[in-house]
Amino acid sequence: MMLDRAFTAGCDPLTASQRAAAYLQAAGYAPVVTAPLRLVLERGSPSVAWITFSPRPLKTQATLTLEPGPGPSTTLSVTLQIITTGQWVLPWDRTFWATELEELEAAVCTGEVRRARSEDRLQAAIRLNLITALVPSVLLAPVLIFATLGALFGMQALWRARRGRPGRGTGGLRPAGR
Image 1 (spheres, rainbow, N blue to C red):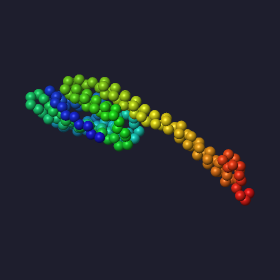
Image 2 (cartoon, rainbow, N blue to C red):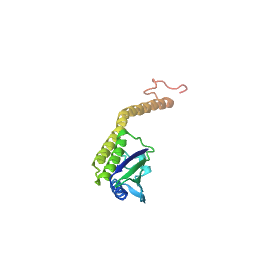
Image 3 (tube, rainbow, N blue to C red):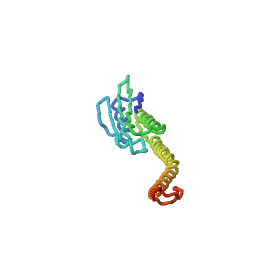
Protein backbone atom coordinates (compact mmCIF):
# COMPACT_ATOMS: atom_id res chain seq x y z
CA MET A 1 0.00 0.00 0.00
CA MET A 2 1.32 3.44 -0.86
CA LEU A 3 0.37 6.82 0.58
CA ASP A 4 1.63 10.04 -0.99
CA ARG A 5 1.65 13.63 0.15
CA ALA A 6 3.29 16.76 -1.23
CA PHE A 7 3.54 20.08 0.58
CA THR A 8 5.61 23.25 0.67
CA ALA A 9 7.52 24.37 3.75
CA GLY A 10 8.76 27.90 4.32
CA CYS A 11 12.36 26.90 5.02
CA ASP A 12 15.50 25.90 3.14
CA PRO A 13 16.01 22.25 2.05
CA LEU A 14 18.61 21.50 4.75
CA THR A 15 16.31 22.65 7.56
CA ALA A 16 13.34 20.79 6.04
CA SER A 17 15.44 17.64 5.75
CA GLN A 18 16.59 17.89 9.37
CA ARG A 19 13.06 18.50 10.66
CA ALA A 20 11.61 15.60 8.63
CA ALA A 21 14.36 13.25 9.80
CA ALA A 22 13.86 14.31 13.43
CA TYR A 23 10.11 13.63 13.24
CA LEU A 24 10.47 10.27 11.49
CA GLN A 25 13.22 9.10 13.87
CA ALA A 26 10.99 10.05 16.83
CA ALA A 27 8.31 7.89 15.17
CA GLY A 28 10.67 4.91 15.12
CA TYR A 29 12.10 5.10 11.60
CA ALA A 30 15.78 4.43 10.96
CA PRO A 31 17.69 6.18 8.16
CA VAL A 32 18.61 4.06 5.14
CA VAL A 33 19.62 6.70 2.58
CA THR A 34 20.62 10.23 3.47
CA ALA A 35 21.34 12.35 0.42
CA PRO A 36 21.14 16.15 0.22
CA LEU A 37 17.70 16.20 -1.45
CA ARG A 38 16.48 12.66 -0.74
CA LEU A 39 15.81 10.76 2.49
CA VAL A 40 14.76 7.13 2.86
CA LEU A 41 13.85 5.83 6.30
CA GLU A 42 12.40 2.46 7.33
CA ARG A 43 10.51 1.05 10.27
CA GLY A 44 9.12 -2.39 11.13
CA SER A 45 9.55 -5.89 9.81
CA PRO A 46 7.78 -7.78 7.00
CA SER A 47 7.37 -10.91 9.14
CA VAL A 48 5.43 -9.06 11.84
CA ALA A 49 2.43 -8.50 9.55
CA TRP A 50 1.17 -12.01 10.25
CA ILE A 51 0.99 -11.60 14.03
CA THR A 52 0.35 -7.93 14.86
CA PHE A 53 -2.79 -5.96 15.64
CA SER A 54 -0.92 -2.66 15.40
CA PRO A 55 -0.13 -0.75 12.19
CA ARG A 56 3.18 0.55 13.58
CA PRO A 57 5.39 -2.59 13.35
CA LEU A 58 4.46 -3.23 9.71
CA LYS A 59 7.41 -2.76 7.32
CA THR A 60 7.14 0.85 6.21
CA GLN A 61 9.51 2.80 4.01
CA ALA A 62 9.27 6.60 4.00
CA THR A 63 10.83 8.27 0.96
CA LEU A 64 11.18 12.05 0.99
CA THR A 65 12.20 14.05 -2.03
CA LEU A 66 13.04 17.72 -1.49
CA GLU A 67 12.97 20.37 -4.20
CA PRO A 68 14.26 23.86 -3.45
CA GLY A 69 11.71 26.51 -4.30
CA PRO A 70 11.97 30.23 -4.87
CA GLY A 71 13.27 32.03 -1.83
CA PRO A 72 13.28 30.22 1.47
CA SER A 73 10.84 27.49 0.54
CA THR A 74 11.08 23.77 -0.13
CA THR A 75 8.61 21.41 -1.73
CA LEU A 76 8.55 17.96 -0.14
CA SER A 77 7.11 14.82 -1.70
CA VAL A 78 6.58 12.07 0.85
CA THR A 79 5.74 8.47 -0.04
CA LEU A 80 4.96 5.84 2.57
CA GLN A 81 5.24 2.36 1.15
CA ILE A 82 3.67 -0.07 3.62
CA ILE A 83 4.00 -3.83 3.23
CA THR A 84 0.65 -5.23 4.34
CA THR A 85 0.99 -8.84 3.16
CA GLY A 86 -1.22 -11.04 5.34
CA GLN A 87 -2.86 -8.04 6.99
CA TRP A 88 -6.32 -6.56 6.69
CA VAL A 89 -5.91 -2.84 6.25
CA LEU A 90 -8.86 -1.29 8.03
CA PRO A 91 -10.00 2.35 8.01
CA TRP A 92 -8.42 3.09 11.41
CA ASP A 93 -5.06 1.79 10.12
CA ARG A 94 -5.26 4.22 7.22
CA THR A 95 -6.18 6.99 9.68
CA PHE A 96 -3.04 6.25 11.70
CA TRP A 97 -0.77 6.63 8.65
CA ALA A 98 -2.64 9.70 7.40
CA THR A 99 -2.17 11.28 10.83
CA GLU A 100 1.55 10.49 10.69
CA LEU A 101 1.77 12.30 7.36
CA GLU A 102 -0.13 15.30 8.77
CA GLU A 103 2.17 15.45 11.78
CA LEU A 104 5.23 15.15 9.51
CA GLU A 105 4.00 18.12 7.50
CA ALA A 106 3.37 20.11 10.69
CA ALA A 107 6.83 19.19 12.03
CA VAL A 108 8.57 20.29 8.84
CA CYS A 109 6.59 23.53 8.54
CA THR A 110 6.75 24.56 12.23
CA GLY A 111 9.84 22.78 13.54
CA GLU A 112 7.89 21.20 16.43
CA VAL A 113 7.75 17.41 16.71
CA ARG A 114 4.35 16.44 18.11
CA ARG A 115 3.24 12.82 18.06
CA ALA A 116 0.22 12.95 20.39
CA ARG A 117 -2.43 12.60 17.68
CA SER A 118 -0.72 9.69 15.93
CA GLU A 119 -0.18 7.95 19.29
CA ASP A 120 -3.92 8.32 19.99
CA ARG A 121 -4.72 6.96 16.53
CA LEU A 122 -2.32 4.04 17.13
CA GLN A 123 -4.04 3.10 20.39
CA ALA A 124 -7.45 3.33 18.72
CA ALA A 125 -6.26 1.17 15.81
CA ILE A 126 -4.92 -1.50 18.17
CA ARG A 127 -8.17 -1.58 20.17
CA LEU A 128 -10.37 -1.75 17.07
CA ASN A 129 -8.18 -4.40 15.41
CA LEU A 130 -8.40 -6.57 18.53
CA ILE A 131 -12.17 -6.17 18.64
CA THR A 132 -12.41 -6.98 14.94
CA ALA A 133 -10.39 -10.15 15.48
CA LEU A 134 -11.98 -11.27 18.75
CA VAL A 135 -15.69 -10.63 18.19
CA PRO A 136 -16.08 -13.20 15.38
CA SER A 137 -14.06 -15.67 17.46
CA VAL A 138 -16.28 -15.19 20.49
CA LEU A 139 -19.42 -15.51 18.39
CA LEU A 140 -18.18 -18.63 16.59
CA ALA A 141 -16.80 -20.39 19.67
CA PRO A 142 -20.16 -21.85 20.85
CA VAL A 143 -20.95 -23.05 17.34
CA LEU A 144 -17.58 -24.78 17.08
CA ILE A 145 -17.94 -26.33 20.52
CA PHE A 146 -21.39 -27.76 19.76
CA ALA A 147 -20.26 -28.99 16.35
CA THR A 148 -17.26 -30.70 17.92
CA LEU A 149 -19.34 -32.30 20.68
CA GLY A 150 -21.94 -33.43 18.14
CA ALA A 151 -19.24 -35.01 16.01
CA LEU A 152 -17.70 -36.75 19.03
CA PHE A 153 -21.02 -38.19 20.19
CA GLY A 154 -21.83 -39.25 16.65
CA MET A 155 -18.47 -40.99 16.35
CA GLN A 156 -19.00 -42.67 19.72
CA ALA A 157 -22.37 -44.04 18.57
CA LEU A 158 -20.79 -45.38 15.36
CA TRP A 159 -17.94 -46.96 17.30
CA ARG A 160 -20.37 -48.67 19.67
CA ALA A 161 -22.44 -49.93 16.74
CA ARG A 162 -19.36 -51.41 15.10
CA ARG A 163 -18.26 -53.08 18.31
CA GLY A 164 -21.70 -54.57 18.79
CA ARG A 165 -22.50 -52.74 21.98
CA PRO A 166 -25.94 -51.28 22.21
CA GLY A 167 -25.91 -47.73 23.38
CA ARG A 168 -26.99 -44.29 22.57
CA GLY A 169 -27.43 -43.79 18.83
CA THR A 170 -27.59 -47.49 17.90
CA GLY A 171 -31.24 -48.04 18.72
CA GLY A 172 -30.30 -51.03 20.85
CA LEU A 173 -29.59 -53.15 17.79
CA ARG A 174 -26.68 -55.54 17.54
CA PRO A 175 -24.94 -56.16 14.23
CA ALA A 176 -25.98 -59.34 12.43
CA GLY A 177 -23.89 -62.43 13.10
CA ARG A 178 -23.25 -61.92 16.80
